[in-house]
Image 1 (tube, one colour):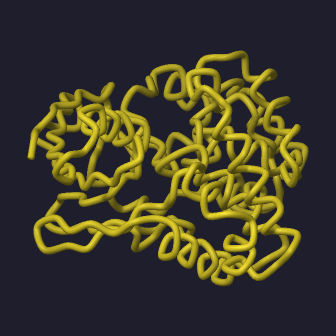
Image 2 (spheres, one colour):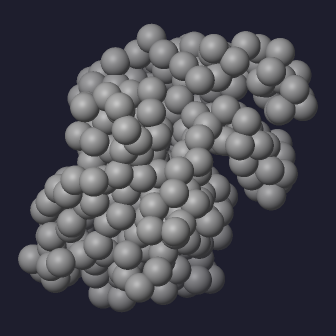
Length: 294
C-alpha cells in the first residue's frame, strides 16, 4: 500500500463531494462512504486499484490523503494512474473563482451557493464510463440502465477488497473489446445499445485522453459525435460528466425544471436560458449547483 497527497483548489468541501457521489444515480452505491472517508476502485493500466480517500484539511485549505492498494505484480504506473483518476473524479483542479464571481450578481443562485460552498463537480470515474452510460441510458429508465451497467461491471470489470469493503470497477474499453461483440451483446440484451457500447469501446481504445482534456472543446465534441450512438445530448453529457468540460452545457428540460423553484414560477424558459448564458464557460457549474441536493 502507498499513500499520496492531493491539494484541491479551494474552496473544496469533501463532505459535499461524498454526499453528491452517493446521490448521483448512475454511480450511487458503487463506492463506500463511511466516517467521512471514500473507498473506490478504479480500473487503470490493465489492473484494478483500490483507493481510500480522506480529508486532512479544511474547506478553505483543503488537503486529501489517498491510500492506494494495487495487486501484487501490478504495473508500477497503476498507483499513479489511480491517484490521477481520484483527482479527476473529484475535480480537484477546478477553480471556482470565475463561477462564484458571476454568482455574486445572481441573488437566487447566491443563496444556493452559500449552502453548497466548496462543492466541486463529482464526475464519472472515467470519460469512457460516462460515454457508455450515455448510450445505455438512451430511451431507457435509469434503473434499467443501471442494471445493464452493473452487469457489464460484473462480467467484464473487476472487484477488489480494501479494509473489508468489496469495491467494483467498470471495465476498460480494452476489456470490452477483447471480450468480443457477442459477449457484450449477451449482457446488454439490446442489439442497438450493444452496437453503441462496442463503438464507444473502439473509439476510446484509440484516443489519447490528453486530447479529451486539453484540445479545443469543438474538436472533442466533433470526435464524440463521430462515434456511433453519440448524438448532441450524449456528447454534451460526456463532455460535462466524463471529462469536466463546462463549455457545452445545453439548458435542457431537467435544468429548466430545477431552475423554476430557484428563479420563480414566473420565470420563462427564455429567462432561465438568459441567466445560464451569463455564466459563459461556467454554465456547467450553474447547472450543477441548481440540481445538487442541499
